[in-house]
Length: 474
Ligand code: ADP
Ligand code: MG
Image (cartoon, rainbow, N blue to C red; front, side, top):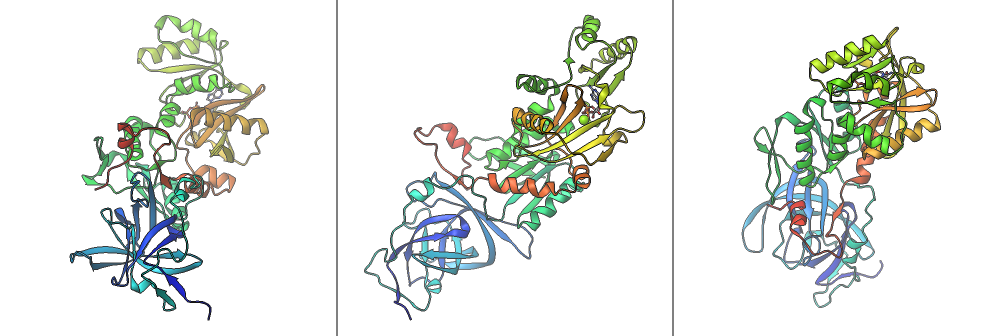
């Protein structure tokens, strides 16, 4: 046998699986179980395999450094604390590392905010070959809280994530695939119906209520907000962001992409090729509008069109005038666009995740139809996109600030022309056509971007807004 392993009356510990590189623990053989400081403790996942998510402030005098942790719950148990009170606590199992040794231990989770140590190491967790020497401090060496300062920001998280899918269609292909793929990767994704969320807008404790019940915290939200609910959906998404969740697409970026006119301005400013487009408010401008886009044939589009429903091809100048006048009579918002004939009733959908085109498909409109939308009888086909098309799609998603986007473009003689950028692109057509597992790529992106540690911004005095961004803890 090698030398005995000595524990002092206090030791520096680490929990690699929880993402905690340094915690100062009090070694207390008078206590049976070990305890870890935790707040906002919330169970999630299936009843037969529950997980617990909690927030941890590892540095006693720096409560603004916050680490989000999650682990499998092994039990829920009544524990008598040092003040004699019984408390029902969640118990997790995880690896403890002290010095060179690492071993699995059980930890109960409890609020130790008022205690000197964030962790208590009880006798059950002390291995048979270890001895406690109550006269020494840190027999296994020192660690430092600086480890939190250098915490890698982009390291993929290992913890099980609790993900909300903001959707009104929990049973469609995209929602089902996201739930499935999340589970395969050890996470839990729950569809949340946007229309059933209400919000309490309050600076100290931003909350979301679901059918009247307060929602727990989520690590990430996947917004799949329908066009009919853009404004309310974005407000709900912002509220999730306030409660500390990572939004796959930022609310502002979704808002920009939904506003076709604004999106066109953003793309134009970024130097991205688009069909010549005109917009006017005055009813006298019909002739000018037509001239702006080079005469007929031209395409007139309702700004709120989706699935090709409000997109009309006017073959002649006369037809163009009557369509424009008709839309005006209805007080509709619309754009007039040059018709890209050589596209041949087809467009290309490029699926962008994190600045890369991860899959693409060609959509070919039905015979005699210039609109290629699958909802209009279009067909998805395999396609190889060019370098130029790839670059244009990536640039368009970036210009609008979208991490995940479906970029639609036309193949024009002069190169790719971007039609629109969709912030919640469907997964069914693209996965079945390209054969790629786009859903898993989205989840991997979330794993790489979810918040790990939240720390105060350096060299800035804490201001009120910082307080607002950090959810208070009940
Ligand atoms: P929606 O948002 O309703 O899908 P789009 O702008 O994407 O509206 O247009 C629907 C379809 O019509 C496109 O996928 C494309 O096939 C066709 N289309 C749209 N604009 C043009 C254009 N300027 N030239 C040629 N075809 C077009
Ligand atoms: Mg479209």
